Length: 510
Image (cartoon, rainbow, N blue to C red; front, side, top):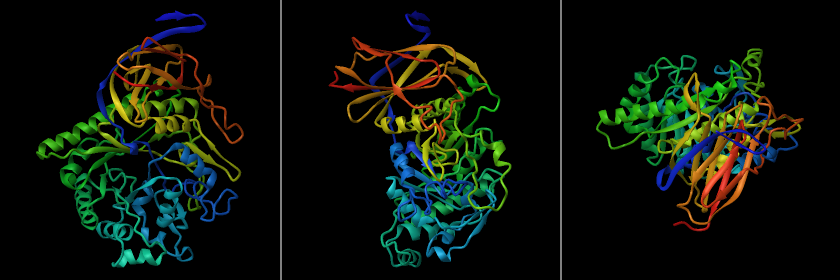
């Protein structure tokens, strides 16, 4: 450690990297999100026909504008737990003929006024692509086959022609499909053993590929690292359906239930371990099968979720789109979200798809009321990393101070370097030290004529600071002033409890 004039005591962190040591290209789908028929995510979130912000299709344009800022490449739909009781046929055709159905997952009534075709129209509105989930809880192979026929065939068959009668002449051509949701969970409608699910996923995937051989499929992995069946579930499921799937899913949420902020900010250590373990199991199955195919990871539910748990217990059942899972995010949650995204990027060789759950109102970066839409604290790391974290990840080694946590040893600084295709080198940096600033250094003399182009800092002295409709700009990024690049050595002072983005323009390289 050392002292700097006008700056609190500094810890030191050094990143070592080589521009030739590339970990993996970033699959842009790692910046995906999730829209479920849950709470006010769909109704009053992305779709509210009576709102003055809505267009002629009922899509809220203020929300759409914020989603476009996030640059979301894919959106998983329609669930989530909801999909395990979903009958997709109820969501298409004339709205006046669509039935209102009870949803056992969230104990509400689903009106089906926003359905499959509305969702596909909305994806075009916000410049994203669908990640469609099928019901393997209460339904199975036949319904899955019929759904992909409806969405992906041009015409000439019953379900493709049915789509055409619904006013959709061209096929939706959906390429990414989830084979159910959290089927390892006893809370799930149609919960199955690993053998039962593995066989069903194999046969459903096979039938769907016969309809459209160009699709990719995601098998259900464990719903969290703490599931008692974790590990054996992945091994058994993949032993059945390995040849019919491309990815296995991971789900994980974190929360500061004990009020220990320093320990909470180390949660991404557990996330890192979880990813490594799932990848190892995939490779073990690959070896046992003597396969040349690699199964990659779809981390298609991740976020902070705990603030609204007590409030959700008070919701009356069988209402329509009540305010469920409406976490109001603290500044410290934004720090952890940044660290979680950095962690997934460190596994970019295996994590190809990821979905922050969810997109609007429900544990979401965007919140709405009848009079406004605003950005929660977690919006900002998501926005910066999604927009500027594309290109390829450089393999790096980090040396610096660490601390003990309930998840294991945790570095005070999380960092990653990404070479962008537009001739920028971008660093994402989190200092989760709640006491001290940290001087981050990196030797970049292998590059020629780098210049600091952008330095953004997300910081607040109060870890529990929030953004609300009344105070939407309480936690926002500001321009940083502590970065310098002299003789090829990058130095930046990372203020305590801060997230920072640094972009360096390359004018040529050696």
